[in-house]
Image (cartoon, rainbow, N blue to C red; front, side):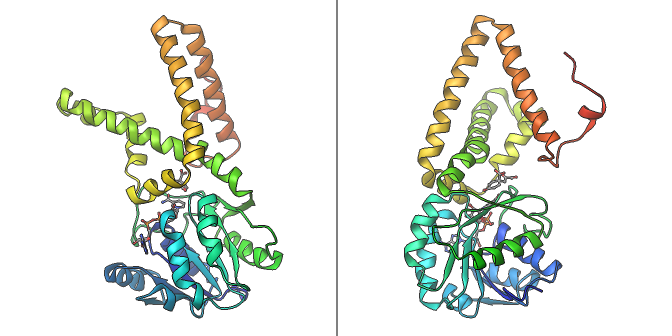
Length: 307
Ligand SMILES: NC(=O)c1ccc[n+]([C@@H]2O[C@H](COP(=O)([O-])OP(=O)(O)OC[C@H]3O[C@@H](n4cnc5c(N)ncnc54)[C@H](O)[C@@H]3O)[C@@H](O)[C@H]2O)c1
Ligand SMILES: O=C(O)C(=O)C[C@]1(C(=O)O)C=C[C@@H](O)C=C1
């Protein structure tokens, strides 16, 4: 058990909070997990599956807590912090799991009382499912968990949080918030937008092709549909709060797309081949670095790809 952080309050009881609770329980790391969700139905599920106690208000949930985890959509982090702020225990740690860091820091920091430690965070792990039944204990195993500590952060509080996250299997790294938001715009936010768009395009076409798009969808398109099934509230908030970085990356993406479009139109096969060879090498680099646990290794086992 973590003597440093024995009582945990989870604010919002969806995929990430429930996964944290399952992981903390499975490893026996904390003494008590209290949860808050708006709906009575969600609270009942949480009580049955992973919380020791649930409360009808966020304020009530945090009173005794040593660690408070804000696990709500990015757009409501500020208002929920304003609600809990007067009830936080001196010395408590508040962290969040939001997919965007700059906007969360801006919204949450002004409400944090003196003597309470706010340490923004983001687990780079998730699925397209949401809600209190979607969590599982191994979600964070061997996945990055980025912390974006603020200036003057208490090193002891940071070390306590880091130790707990590492104990549930995460690889913890620290990063400056602005850099986090740019990196995530590249590796997560813009790819989600592209997936949403592609599935939208296919849906328009479906009406023309009489369901064949869905019937014969191959694995590439299926991957897009999985991503595009992600929670609409969460992703609306991500795009609205990481606007600048996403628009920057989307601009670059559009330029590349236009270039490829032109090469296809002009029949420039050599250029297309060179481009695809470069992207294939990037993918193989990710697998070789052990960053994609979902990738089968037959590509490597069978030797080099065909030239
Ligand atoms: N899903 C992912 O892949 C993923 C990965 C990493 C981080 N995150 C981040 O984690 C956070 C939670 O995401 P999740 O996937 O667990 O979502 P989820 O939809 O599964 O759960 C969100 C919870 O917040 C509650 N909630 C929503 N609006 C609220 C409000 N106004 N007041 C109080 N509670 C409210 C919901 O009822 C639910 O209990 C988000 O900030 C998201 O950006 C998500
Ligand atoms: O695997 C998925 O379903 C995800 O999309 C998870 C994913 C991502 O990798 O982009 C999505 C959003 C988060 O903030 C972190 C992780």
